[in-house]
Image 1 (cartoon, rainbow over the protein chains, first blue to last red):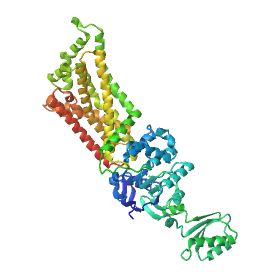
Image 2 (image 1 turned 90 degrees about the horizontal axis):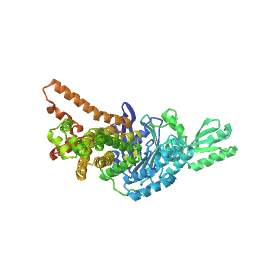
Image 3 (image 1 turned 120 degrees about the horizontal axis):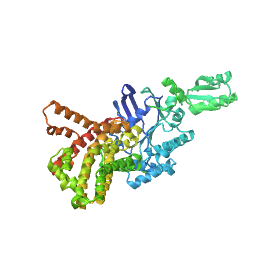
Image 4 (image 1 turned 180 degrees about the vertical axis):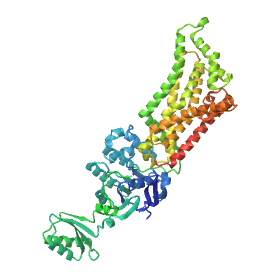
Length: 316
Length: 310
């Protein structure tokens, strides 16, 4: 199957600063693809080149087989939520959405209908006649999101859609993205690693303009082979020995007094069987886990890969 | 959600240019910037008109010498040798041209147009400086870039400003003509309106290259204020440089002022009075020059806009 987005040797320099350095990526169709990286890693630059806002210094990006230098050939097929683009402050939101819909190829009345429908989808039909500057940050983010869902784009780029939002608004945006992007390719950047782990099936970690790691979420977090178990009290030596003796357990790593990782061997039995054996063993010692996670924490993997700290501020 | 129905264009699309122009004009009318420009244009136009009309209004109140009516007196003054000489000096032309402007055409409107044309480039800059710079700074253009070619955005904004400028010019000219007609009443209506229309055409063609110049400067800079400052500076400073160059050539060579008249033809401003010339071929050449300047500025602007990061 042809990749939805193919990035080939992409390099972008701003004066002497290298924002992207020979990036190669193939983003599969209909995937929810997470783009992660610390500040200044080059995520927004990558998005901006994919959308035709910035010109690459070298290399290319193809979206659905079309080089983005011919961006108008992708009209209606590529949509984006830019991180920091502003609407016209004094103009009613609906008029701006109608203009976007008309540029997407809709006739006047169909464009109005599509704009109204898009505002309803994001739960903001009441702001149609309001000037953009009268809206709160959360509302503006949802309006910006709704412009990305005008038309029927096959590839949608969402550059930090939940950045700067309160938890409730962030949750609403996540729900909208899940609901509206079925059967579409969505590339999603976020500083919320848990959000990316929960939502995305593929992930790419960029650091200092280079791809550090790329693959399915499963392979990155080793979710098939690793479980994290959190307990109420410390794990006893006996219980640890019993777990270690299980044929499905390859190793135990204590990460804190009440938390440990189990590396599984699921080649003989399935993962469900392995988990059954683990729960059974723990129950034998009257140990009932507080929580069980499949795979390593994405945050831990992220920090391991980038070798830095994660501060959750805006990106470049 | 309804899917997009039209097929994707391969290059620039007149339909998109019109759409962007239309919305840009509507947005300008509803935003502070557009209203400010309209007010500036009206203020400049009416100030120039009142410069001539106020003294004549005073004349209308008194009886003229030798039993002349006030209207006849105003015409006599404007058609006098002194005014004719002043017009020849201002327009750098001969007596044929001054006779055309002062005797064959309504002299009062000619005088207003001569002064108005001097101000047009500077006034135009106030309406045209922010074609793209503000939206480049706020990254608002990014919503359009996903949906259309850069050329359509650049040309659409240019056409939008042009349309808004035309509306402002028509409004200003209408007020001036009505003012002259009803306050002074010295000229037949048809003559006044037809000369007013020709004057409007001259103002329009002179403003064209300056709107295009602003389009170019506006896409070079990310700050609207910087764009306005540079547009005004280029429009005004180029004239100062040309005057200094002319003075230097006059003092250092044997050239006479007449032979150096071409110097000012290197900028659009230097062609302004040819746009009001009595000889149709001179007018056509001036219009072609304006279109040439416009095309050159648009070409430079478009070339930069298509390459730059937005």
